[in-house]
Amino acid sequence: MISLRFGQEAPGFSLPSSTGAQTALADFKGKSDVVLVFYCYDWGGI
Image (cartoon, rainbow, N blue to C red; front, top):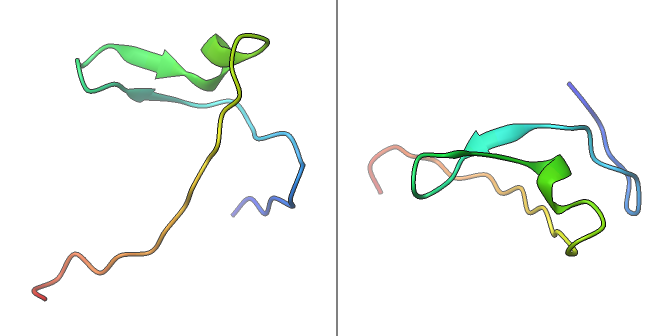
């Protein structure tokens, strides 16, 4: 497990966008601020 602290640079990763194309965190470096939000959610029946 990776543990990050506030202000620490995030490790590189990529994910599919809403259009299905791969989007990498590095695509935004120097172009735009990026906010990463991690939340826990129980996908079980609510």
